[in-house]
Length: 168
Image (cartoon, rainbow, N blue to C red):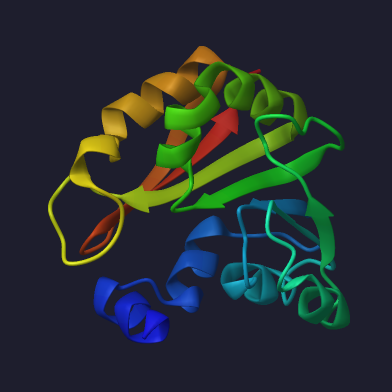
């Protein structure tokens, strides 16, 4: 079912990974990465991929694939330093739960880039309630508040994908 939704939404792993332009040697953390859908493809570009998630149900499978795992909540996690911090369909939840702490922690662990893939604030047959979905402008302003500028964006059917770079 999830694969059908991803396909219908234009969320193909190839289109997302190509957009991110991951370089060999990048260190990447996938916040809320669950089953590693994107992380597994990122591993083809860089050998240093970590999934951070509260739910460790997929951790054995991810470790076997060569992905590091951390059982934690970004509201409380601020260890490590990563070239790319990636979040797919989780940022809207972080804003609801712990916006200021999450932004502080993301800023601390992000060396170069932050990529946010999230639902457009429009009604769809799936996804979070429209009332908690965030506009691109809100996300852009949040990232700007911690010193990141928008460098690239992609519109998908039900989602937007934003890539931010740390301002020097």
